Structures are given as structure tokens and as C-alpha cells.
Length: 580
Image (cartoon, rainbow, N blue to C red; front, side, top):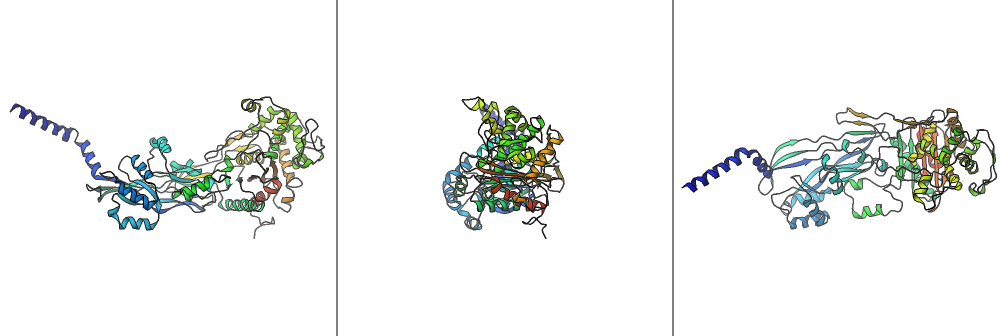
């Protein structure tokens, strides 16, 4: 009797403990077994250009998911789903194994209507398989602006491990590149969902509650889509005409740092990633020798060639190693080291402006000789070279400024030679810049020495239309250079388009501009062609930088692109007149 009483007392005590003290805990577990949270993805914020033109939006699409059941997903269902969706069984099993909680396991996004019909009509063959209506990213311009806009795709295991503490979950769609990546938190919004009661087999019985998703913030970009399209067209036409395959172009307002257009070729269609890129499509992109996935405007590092003479000339004037009117004789090669001009050209007596206008190597070799590598390095860094510009895009490269420390660290023969200073003075040797950095240097001259931080987003706008953030011009630095020396460089660059290396291409152009051509030696093949310019000359609001990989002379490969971009920027037709 005593034993029976004790057993009963223990049972009653245990029941009381479970039902009263831990009742809320076990009630939650019970609800977890009968209630499922079916998430509803929030639409990502949309992109608009500076004039309100729609660039990137969302469209409705169907996703196939597995709703977690009380029993494991059978191998038969996995095999059947794999065959239908053309998704390997191992990939499905990996997603199931890595999943936790009660959210649906997304297997494939943006499936076709016929797949939806098969699953709906054969529900008994696909127990636990559900169709979700999800917003699919829609890049309505396809390849145009792709490197700036970026793309989205499903979060991978590595990213999830880094970002799970920030609220990211398996199956989330995140920005992987471009603006989509940098502003992912602002764009992704807040997911909603439904509380669904299910029976013992996991079949939905009724909806208990609903939370509407909150769309992400919209972005108003600095991009002018009409100028962007004109720049894309100009690049494509020129590449076709000269038989080249890769190029980059940047258009920027030097007074604000706003990026008006940004082109990189070859390009890709970001829609491929939005609905799940196939292995065949990925291999075509990944194996392309001209790297379409690289944004060459900020990741491409090239010798700046003669565009670097802007830096050398500014340094020479400021340091007083040459006067504007001093005449230096070009016999075709320098008198200390026999380095000369392209094709052995000899230009005779030259002062500063004429040397810059004609891009005379011998003159600028002598400027390098008088300055030395240390002062050249100082002014290159003053212009912001050798460091990232800070643009709000991922994977920006820093470039390289030629200097003694770099050679000592990376080469067995660490001694610095005068010939290397000569090379550095004309933008060769160790010097490397990105097209954006080349635009930045030209922009500093255009803005009387001011350097503004480049950016591609003007405003972040909440779903209710309120402004979350308004990006204002950010002044990064001011050249420590006398105004009269900047004016001399401006005049020399103006002469480039009047009687210098770009004069023939800008004959009849009714807006005064300043420019600089460049040809960068390339050890891997044909030289790269450069052109940088700004205008209008008296009140600049547009800077253009163009590079054509393996394009040869900049005056022949890059200048025609630059002219067409400037025509579009100033509203001219191809004859230089106003558009009717």
C-alpha cells in the first residue's frame, strides 16, 4: 500500500510539474508540432534612375518548396522531385539536412507553370511539396547597367555562417554583386507569413493568422539611364568596328562625385541569377577569357599611359622644376636614356602646354628626371591614386603607385633605376589605375583640385515615400597645388582637343572640352587605348574615362567612344550640332 501511495504521489507530482510549472513550455512544443509558419517573402526595393525611370523591379514567380513534416521526406519524393525539377538529389538532401525550424525548404525558384500544374494535379505523388508565390527580381534592361546594379541569388552556406546573426536564414535571396550587395539590408525588407495549422500527416488544415510582408526600401540612383544606354551603345559599336572584346567607360559629375553612367564589357544578364542559373550558363560566363563578371570600371587595373602626364605635369609645375614657358628640345629620344616617342616621332622645341597637348614622351621623361620617383609618388597619392575611391560598389581595386618600397618588397633586385622613373613619369612601369581612378584624376583638374567621393545612389526611399537617407556630395581632399598651376594643366588639356592628339576627332564639336589620350603598353598583347575628358571647359559637369583593352592607340580606339558619350551628355547629334 505504501509503495502504491508513493507511486501515485510521484505521478501526481510529476503531472503537476509538467502541466503547471512547465505547462507553457510543453504547450509551445505541442503548437510547434501542429502549427507551421509559412513565410511570405518581402519584395526587394526597386531601383530608379536620377530622373525617376524604373530600372530594376520585381515580378511574381513560383517556387517549389518542401514544408517540414512530422516524418522525414522519403527518398521516393526526393527522387521524383529531382527528376521533375532537374535538381540533383544530393543537392535536395543537402538543403534538407542543413535546414532547421519549420520554414519551408526552398528547392527551386521561378519554375514554369507546367511544373506548378504537375505538382498541383499530382499532390498524392508529392506529399509535403508546396508551391510558393515569391517575388522574382526583374532586371528589365537585361545587360545594360548589369555591373552597377548587380544581381541576387540564394544565400550559400559560407554566407549564411557569416550572416545568420544578422537575421539571414537558409533559402534567403540576397544581393551578391553591385548595388544589390552593398545595399542588401536596405533592399530586402521584412518577410511576412501565415500561421498554418496542420494535421498529423503535415497537411494544412486552416490558416490561424497572417502577417503581411514589408517591402524593402527603394533606391534612387545617380545613373542617367539615357546616358547609360548611349555609353553602352558607343562601346559596343566601337568594339565591333575595331575587333576588340573588352572595354570600360565611366561618366561622372566632377562637382559632386555622382556616377552618371558606368559600362563594362563584356557583360552578363543578371536575370540568369535571379531565377537560378544553370551549370551550362555559369560555365559560359566563368570560362569567357574576357571575364564578363568583372566590373572593369572598378576592378580592372591598367597602366594609365599618357593620362598619368596630368599628375607628372602638375607635380613638375608645383615643385618648380620647370616653368610654363621653358623650351625643351625633343629630338626623338631623351639624351640620358634613349627612350622616345611612339614610332620615333620628334617634335622639336616644346613648352609645357604644347608638350601636354601633343603628349610628348621626351618632355615628360625629363620631368620625371627632374622630379625623381619620390616626388612623383607623393603627387600620385595626393591625387588619390594607389587607394580605393570609396565608391559604394563591392570589390573595388586599389591600383598601384610606382614607388621604391614596392620594388624592394616584390623583386630580388630592389634597387631603383632612373629608367623606371622615366617609365613612371609617362604612366608605365609599375603604375596601375582603374578607369574610375582615371576619371577621378581628370575630375580633380576639372573641379579646380577638389576630389569628391564617387557614389551611385542618391537617395534611399522608404515604402511610404519618405526619404531614409539623402546622399550629399562628400569632399575627400583638395590638391595642395597653386591655382595657377591647375589652370596651366587645364589649358594644356584644352589644347589636346584643339590642336593636340584628339583635335581631329573633336573638330566641329560645339562645346569646349578638355581631354587627354593615352596608350598603355601591354606585355600580354596589343596596347590598351585610353581617353579621359571633361566639359564644358569653363563650367565642367561631366567627366568621361574610357579604356579599350587591346585597342591600340587611344586616339583611335577610345576617343570615338568618348566623343559619342559627350554628344549624349550634352544633347548633340553626331555632327556636333544640337539635336532637333
